[in-house]
Image 1 (cartoon, one colour):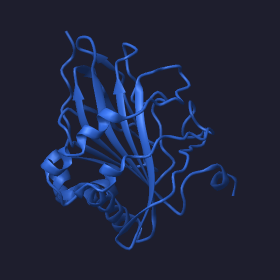
Image 2 (cartoon, rainbow, N blue to C red; image 1 turned 60 degrees about the horizontal axis):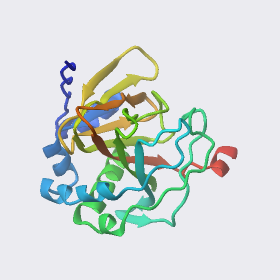
Image 3 (spheres, rainbow, N blue to C red; image 1 turned 45 degrees about the vertical axis):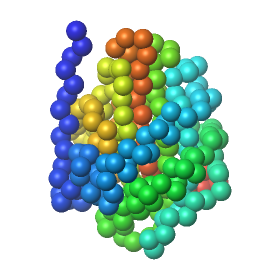
Image 4 (tube, rainbow, N blue to C red; image 1 turned 135 degrees about the vertical axis):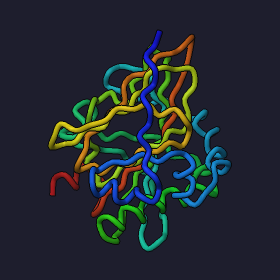
Length: 250
C-alpha cells in the first residue's frame, strides 16, 4: 500500500508576493493560479491536449526514455511578450550536474499553445510578479512542456536531483497526472535546514520559487498499473540575458 500524498501548503493569492519575499517559495491553489493569470480553469484546460503531442527528450544522459518535452523562449518587457527564434536550452554544470554544459535543442512549443487565450497572460503574470519583487526590467523567459511517464517502469521528473536552475524565478505548474504514485515535490532553503514536502495532485496547482534562495526536486513516479504520466509546465525568468555558454564565459 502506497503512502498517502502529503497535503499542499497553499498560499493565498493576496499573500503571494510577501511569501516569496519572506521565504522564497509559495504554492497557489488552482483557482488562485487562474485568478493570478487573469484567466479561467476552462481556458487553462484548453491547453492540456498539447501535452499528448510532445516529442521524446533525446538528451537524457541516464539512458532513460521517460521524458517528453517542448521548449520555447521569450523576452517580456513593458507588457509585451516576444517569442525569440528557437534556441538551445543550456545550463552550467554548477546547476545541473547531469546535463550541464550541453546545448540541448528541443522542438518548439506548438503555435496553437502560444496563440491560446491563456498563454500570454500566464507568461506576463509571472513577469509582473518578478518585476514587483526585483524591479521592472526585461525578463528572459524559457518555457518547458514536460511529460514524465512510466515507459521505463519509473519516471524521474528531476533526474539531476535537488537543484537550482540558475535563474531568478521558477514556476512549476502541474498540468495533470494520471495512473501514478509518487511525484512528491521537495523544496529546501539554500542556506539552512528548513524545507517542505508535498504532492501536487490537482491540475493547475502552481509552485513559485525564488531560485537564489531555494533548491527543489520532485521524486520519481511509478505506475499504479501498467502506464501513467505526470505533465507540467515549467517557466523560468532570468534578468539580464538567457543562460548560454557565451553568458557563462563573460
